[in-house]
Image (cartoon, rainbow, N blue to C red; front, top):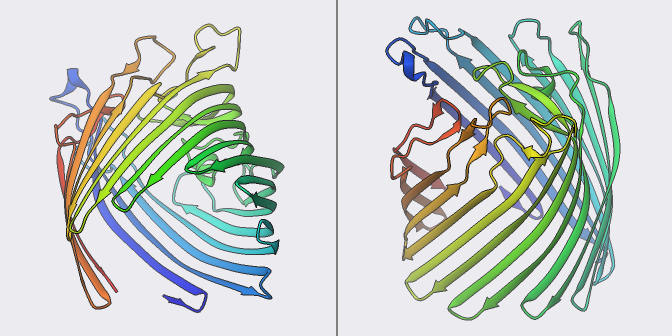
Length: 419
């Protein structure tokens, strides 16, 4: 709902699905892994924005979220699989206030405060409810003068957890982090660079989930540097854009999730220090006529993402981060005619290490093609649509996790209605 600067949204999602099990080839006639997952997600949010005296803006946001998850493997068929029937529920109450002052058209000054209160509940063994108070404050300045854009900000984050569990809550976290960006636009060409210091606190799931969580997780601290360019060309029928960025990330206490206790039990842990550098490139073209639309998008990512925690450990030092590919690319094409859209996307992901235990523990590269056909129709203030989608068109059962192949070719039909 939208009215005079006020907007609100209500969302509800309910699903039940089967979970693909692992494949043990030499026990394929004996090994069964049956699992199901239930999800119920609900949120309601409201926002109000107002401008007064030409130079002042205020924005208020509020949101309540309730997320429920049930995961069950407690079935008679599962003779060789751990049987669980776990229920999780997380609730969040969020509020934010932002004020902006614009003394001149080329300058904007702002300050904001965010607060979130969370509760995580589960019926796991040795688990008690966990509560978190998360507060953020930021002050920022942005200037845009004759094609030169400069922005700077300072963010303060504070996290405090509480629980009645005998092991206690994680220590409170408090951190200040800066960011600065610089860009220059001349015609359709923009040159840009930015530096950010990013602080990531472990989530409640990371810290407190039984078997998976780790109370001793340290917060992740990232220093990012980026240099890039972007070019746009627009005409009555054609829109073209090209952009490329080179980047470098230095991450201390990187938070990762790995199958340290076997493929079926994952654990949260920190890498002491990792170093990543890479290239992101995107090219897009679009043609429009009276009834027709053609669009083509291509993306390419190359990166070297390595573990540099312990120089004395030959098995891990300067080795790729597990599950991090060096090369990935994608192509998406869209053909539209009046109310019909036909889109096809192609994705390539290169090989990834999944364990340091054996140099041959490498997941093979994979290709994936999805296609979908969409029809939409509007009548007055209402709009309805139907979408038919074929995922993994070539039926390639690639693996994101070893011995857990994706389901292969599958189909999806979606009906939508909006007012």
